[in-house]
Image (cartoon, rainbow, N blue to C red):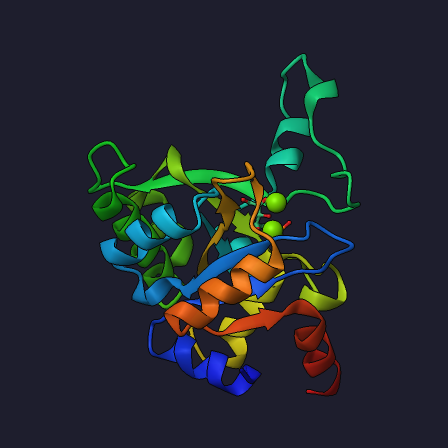
Length: 221
Ligand SMILES: O=C(CO)[C@H](O)[C@H](O)COP(=O)(O)O
Ligand SMILES: [Mg+2]
Ligand SMILES: [Mg+2]
């Protein structure tokens, strides 16, 4: 499956699977452009991925919303348990978590319908004039969908699913806001292996992108 066909899938509002690398998380995330997310997408990520469903956003967009990384927010806060604040994960990256949000029209925030609304409305904010004002009036925190902020410099700075998925959306000409969820294995209680993900991808006609290929593509484009 070529990167080009994966981009076409994203443009049609379909899933792609994204592997980071064996030396990093060694995980495969289901990825879909946030602007297309429906309750059915959320149900499928819940059933076929089962990890944490997050919204990844481009760094400039985060800045325009006055968002910070959660580890920065906590470092600057008056909490006493500062030693708990995540520095680097075992594979060497800082977490990209920021606030978690619910759209104001959700009820509990966790249902497929509620999360789909939160995710798709988050993409819409990217394209309005006064983003910060609209964001503050349309979303509540804490909520049921974590926001992840892609690094400034994107793939040159960090090679996580956060950056790779936002980069894919950008290259596809879409709003750089994605919904991503790690694929878990209910048989082994670990992350889904690449072999099993390849099988799933084939059976379901979903493109699987290797992060290595994406990084090579980014170098020459
Ligand atoms: O931990 C995560 C949030 O559920 C996932 O790994 C997600 O893929 C984003 O993180 P990263 O950019 O580090 O891969
Ligand atoms: Mg992770
Ligand atoms: Mg990841």
